[in-house]
Image: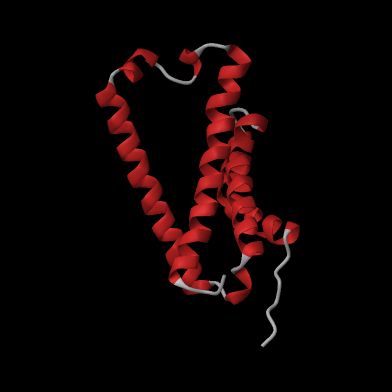
Amino acid sequence: MNKSRKSALRLSAAAVLSFTVTSAVVNILLPYLLTGDAHTIIENPERLSQPSQVLALTGILSLFLLILIGLGAFWLYRFFGEAYYGPYGVARWAVFGALLALLLKLPDWLASEGLWLVVKYAIWILSPFIAFFLARWLIPLKRRNG
């Protein structure tokens, strides 16, 4: 996979998809499995039995995810070199998305109120950078010859 706009879209989609799936597991599936009560994750689960509500939610989320994929593809194509593309690139961006989702949830698991609020915001601000460099460390860049 060479550097192109289409490749950038694929890489961005891999990152957004892994972020979305990891966030859904951490924020929706795990709390439901731990409590067995849908009210812990959805205030009024009966609203999801209405098709119009489900369609509206699906449409809004799809539009939001497409905007994220487009923004990510722009940044990838504009600012990242050829070494970030290819099959290792797809895996690296997918790992980045999963790590970002976990790092954004980490302060909720560790920090409570009060003085920890500073730590919580610091982790939120630094999490994209930490996720990027961890993903790059886990799946190193492959330099292309020529």
